[in-house]
Amino acid sequence: MISRLPSASLLPVVIAGALLVAVPTVAFSAQQAKPRAAAQKHKNKAAAAEPAFTTDANGRSVPVLANKAWVLMDYDSGQVLASSNADEPLPPASLTKMMTSYLVEQGLKNGKVKPTDMVTMSESAWCRGGKGGDSCMFVPLNTQASVMDMLRGVVIASGNDASKALAEHIGGSEAGFVAMMNAEAKKLGMTKTQFANAAGLPDPNNKASARDLAVLAAAIIRNSAEYYPIYAEREFTYNGIKQGNRNALLYTDPTVDGLKTGHTQEAGYCLTASAKRNGMRLISVIMNADSMQARADQTRVLFNWGYANFEQARPAQAGATLTSAKVTYGVAQTVNAGVAQDWALLVPRGESAAVQTSVALNPVLEAPIAKGAVVGKIVATVNGKPVGEAPLVALADVERAGFFERLRQRVVGWFVK
Image (cartoon, rainbow, N blue to C red; front, side, top):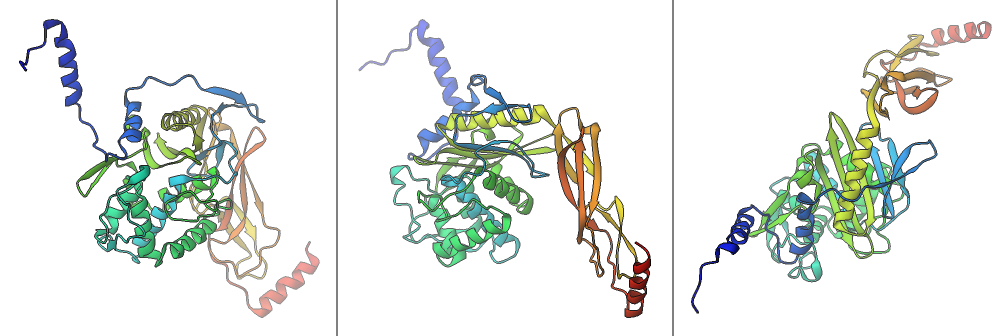
C-alpha cells in the first residue's frame, strides 16, 4: 500500500492531533483508565449548569444538590455551615480508606510503624489482576512493599489490596484492624459510623454519615499534618504502573489539597475534599452522587458558596484572660480563665466586626484546679444570635488549701452570701 501525504485541507486536523498527543497525560492501568479519564475531563470542561438554591430555616440561600447526603464544615471550629441528611448512615465506599490511612499515619507518628517497614501482599489481600474494575495498587502476590508505598497506594491509587495488606500488617488480621477502626471512630465522635472492612467494599455493616466523614477528614488534616500532603499528590507509580488521583478537583482548583474519592454501585459516587483560601479551610463531603463529574461539580458549588457567604472571626486569643473565676477551698481564691487555643469561627460575610462574646462560668469551682481544666464557656453572638461557643479553661493551677484555711473559708461563707 502506498502511503500518501495528507492533503492541504487535512493539515490543520493532523497538526491539531499531533499537538494533543504532545500534551502530557497521566498514565493509568487498563482497568482504571475509563473512570480516571473522565475525571481528567474537568480540566477542559466549561462550568456546569448553574446550581439550584433554596432558603433554609435561617433565611439563608443554600445549595440544592442531587445526592443522598452532603456536608460543608469549617475546619477550625467544626461548624457545619450547611448540610443535607448529614447524620444518615450510608455506604461510604472507599471513603472508608480515610480511616485506614489515618490509623497508618498515627502508627507512623507514634513509632509503632516505620516508613521503611515491609508489608507482605498476602493472598487474601492480593488483587487478582484487578478484575471487575477493582481499585488496586497492583503489588504482586507474596511480594513486599514499604509502608510508605502502601500508604500512597491507599490514598492516591485507592488500592483495595494495599488497604487489606496494611490492615493485616498493623492489626494482625483485617478483623483486628477493623476493631481498631471502630474504636478510633468512637474516640473521634463518629457516632453514626460502623466499619466492616478496611477498603470500603460493599457490606451491610459498613456505614458512615457525611458529618462523621467530615470529622474524620479534619482529624487527618490536624493530627496527620506530616502526611497530609500525600492527599494532594496527583499520581503514584508502583510496579511500573502509573495511576492518577481520582479527585478531579486536584487538577482544576489549586486551593484543593485532599482528600478521598469513593464509588460502588450501592454507594454511588462519593467525595470528601478540603480547600484552603486566604487562611480559611473548608471540608466538604458528597455521598451518592450519580457520576464522577457530579461529585466534583457539587463539591465545587459548596466551596464557592461557602467562601462567598462566610468569613472568619477570631473572638479570643489563646492565653488571654477573659474573666476571673471564684475558687473555693483554694490557696488562691480566684483563677484567671481564657481559651486554650486561638478561637476561630465563621460568621456571615460582613459581620465579623459585629461579633460579641459573653462568658458563663460553672456555678461551683472547688480546688484543686489544674491548668487547662474547663471552668465554663464563652459564647459568641451576632445581633443577639449565637454563632458559636468554646470552653473556658483555667489559665493556672490552684492548689487546695490546708485544713484550717478551708475551715476559715467555710465559716466566712456562712456569713457572706
